[in-house]
Image 1: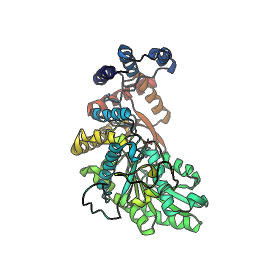
Image 2: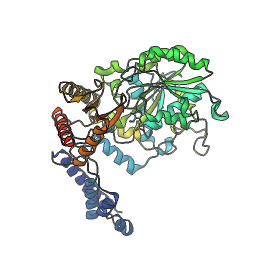
Image 3: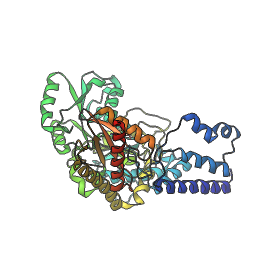
Image 4: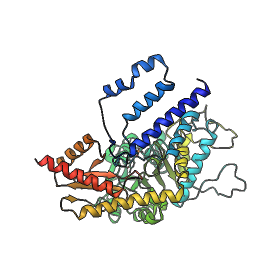
Length: 479
Ligand SMILES: Cc1ncc(COP(=O)(O)O)c(C=O)c1O
């Protein structure tokens, strides 16, 4: 394909995407409509296009427009379903640059620019947590000592949790990598932890039953004061504790665990402290909400998803460690054809990650944040958090709605009536109508409707409109 073709095609795709963004703002345009796979494939004419190989010019423009037509519209302010960012357009261009350059930057020589930016973003996150940043290769007069933080970006938070707990295992039980697991190692997690933690415990061979939930208060937050008793009991039962995990924040209702108290216990007892800040890392950079993550610096590892509250396109997550040795020695395998003694002006990230080939995850994170700046990002996060609280306060004034807890982040749970099945039926009808897209969750042994307010343009009026529509559907279900 000629470069002229590329320019014209890119122009056509960008023009279709711009129309798409305009369409997302139209009040009558559905946020979600799900048609059967067969219908979508037919409309996209995929059978013919894959044979002929001429996806170019007007055909490409038509294909793009048809494809966009069938997407779920995250840029529509009525998108409030899942913890997936509404990406900044500049961040999306980062994905485009990364796609075209395809610098698989797990080794420095395959992506110096991508590695440099990932390195910068890791240091930025380390600094925000309050940990010592890593020395920058090539920086004149760098006085960083041997003790500093480090990290690696991963394709998602689940993989980041896995990487962090492998680092914990290698630090606490270095022989397991070679000898296998003795069978009595446990990991303590919050009752409200993300399923990826239990899955990690299964994957790394500790056995799912050795993923133990800690006592929680009525809202599901870890009761730190009960941890010492649990530790004592587990030790008496012959268990060895590999790590304790704190939420910042939990997935269902978005509540933060008392990190400071959990961290204090872990530090005193020399237990690895891991903080899952996949969703709630926003509080780390937001002065107003920083108190929610007080004590996070006590952690040994933290995970942080940029593709949730940092306006970054999927996937872009990080696992960060206070002591760089822990990520450097997490995986002891060697791929000798890639990693050998070599003089190079940068660093290889591959020894720190599960992945071998890695995309430019730092680039899209950087471009998304640099487009709005740190203050803009902080305003976005605090604005979304305040909107969730405002909506909960409003719902609490109504007789027919109920919230299980005051939101601490942009996640709002609510329901109408007290029938679990009814909430599911309401959501089904809501999604079928297509005007709103929300999720549901189990929390406090009940089913709730759930909004994750990710879109910068979602307003209080949008939420009131949602509650009215929920009420209307509920009334009709009664008839
Ligand atoms: C607290 C928490 N941890 C981890 C994850 C997993 O992250 P990812 O979806 O990026 O794999 C999620 C996802 O929602 C989450 O809420």
